[in-house]
Image: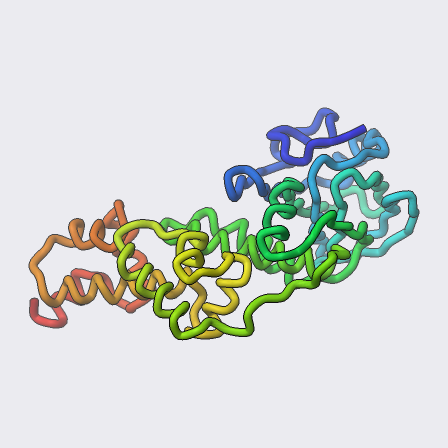
Length: 306
């Protein structure tokens, strides 16, 4: 049977409490982060009912077990007994049959893991836009350490709470990093990931000019990279190498520098300055200004005698 891991209900098609699952939708619902947490004694009746199934999407299962957990996994026709712990991932490609049975650990133990779920078309389009020919042969992978993907997933879980016009830019950068990792490590591709070794001076100038010209808006990674004549996939890495900042960090600092200039040279209300640098909510602007510069915009204006 095929299971939809992007469903808004339990992907297992069995009765489970709503409190077990939480979802975060990313990138126009093409990517979803599904978080799971339950006691082993509550999980076992449902887990035993899970049949051998094929995921509709590409699924990265990220393990958060503080103590090693024994389990048995059947993946793509292979069976393996595993001892897995925090930092491990299992990669379940779309349409690869798999089944999981938990070991006989302490029934009061809390089981916690996440699914990072990608629609196949999202990875395929991203790969094709970067010269990676198809079809992509993804490699079903049993539990293996991957702290890089774990770090990205943890950051994505909190990134959606960022009250900042550049928040989407930050999320896009994280997703591109996750996709690069997947294509590099868990796929056999016709052409390995490659790209220009660095941004040219002209590309960097065009990207920075675009950011300055659109500072009152919410520029996304795609629009900035197109201004530089590059795909978003490679741009974020090359931009950080050239400037020392991620696109999200650079946009935020550029907004703050523009705000400082307006605070010094004008008597505009804080709310008007916030809107001019892309913040519709003055309190969000003030919080970001304080986190970057160490004081709020009112205190900054008083300190310069304006």
